[in-house]
Length: 145
Figure 1: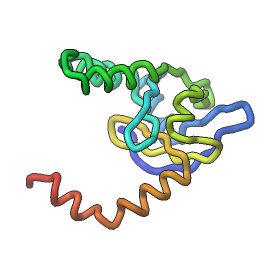
Figure 2: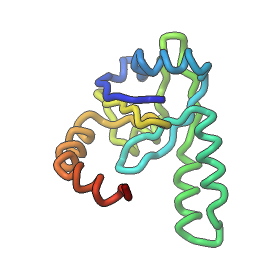
Figure 3: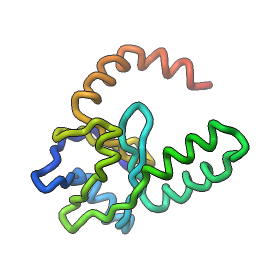
Figure 4: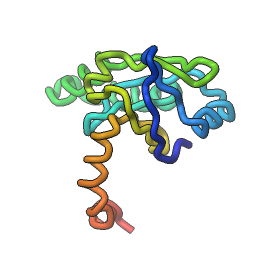
């Protein structure tokens, strides 16, 4: 559903704009609301409301008797927030999530199929340069084809 890599900046009012291709997807599928949450690797995860409900059910089904499950759920849900982009596709990222992702102004917005990831531009460049060389090896390790 969401694909690609886009450079954007947070404006003077603290708003971030969704890439035009993502806004087109939102129109096509009548997506109005998103959920933002602490992502892995110090990014922000952005889910459509429908996908958030799917993921939320998975997280709620984790056994609360396991400490790792409790910690994960606390950190994920306590940091989550819903946003409704305006007609131009702009929305405000909550301060706690900007701090989690160490975002100041320049960001990279990634389409990762069923979610969007929002990265600080420098952190994304570091992640990409450190990870891209091992792309083929990673694919070989995780794919059972």
